[in-house]
Length: 137
Image 1 (cartoon, helix red, strand yellow):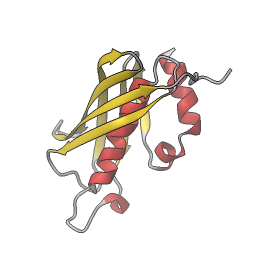
Image 2 (cartoon, one colour):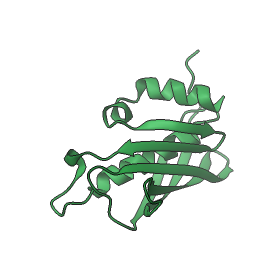
Image 3 (cartoon, one colour):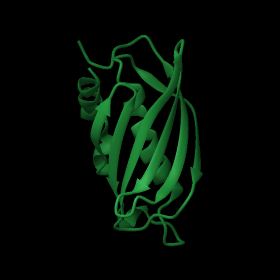
Image 4 (cartoon, one colour):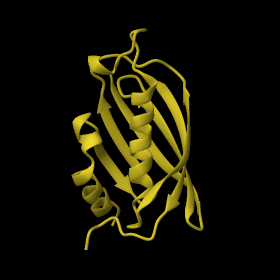
């Protein structure tokens, strides 16, 4: 079910597709995404703009919380930038469900540089489930 939900979402996820984000692993309540950093993502200080780091973490969060075939969206999110990332880096975001209650959930995402496993950012998202299926009927 989780894989089918991810495939259905990715078909419509032009943001992830255009940024080269790949969903490399998905299971109930978890997702792993990879994104190559390009020069277009670097700010005036020579490091990856925080918005791109947030976007990668938010993407992994979205795929993790949509593994149950119920459309689930972000209600809130918070990010802490831990270390810089640079042009040419490959980043990995791993999202894991911490708890689900009613129509809400809490998910943690760690973004790492794949070459040395340095933690780049920590993200926490709160989700809200809607009554629609992810997989089209």
